[in-house]
Length: 45
Image (cartoon, rainbow, N blue to C red; front, side):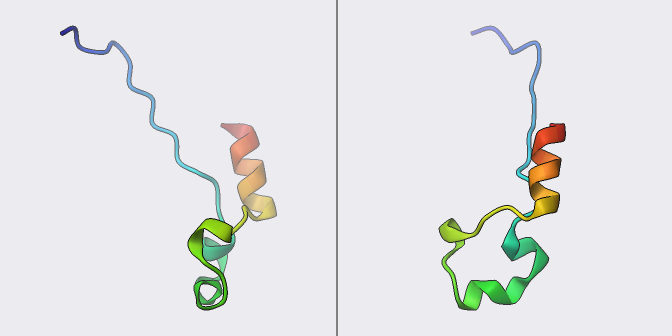
């Protein structure tokens, strides 16, 4: 099997949970949205 010539790593933008870790007490992880900063980070990627 040939090795890939390029590996691209992409990380998600800032989420509500990254900005406020107490939100996990109220919302499940899958329900958290990106913050305005996170949306901008995603646009820049």
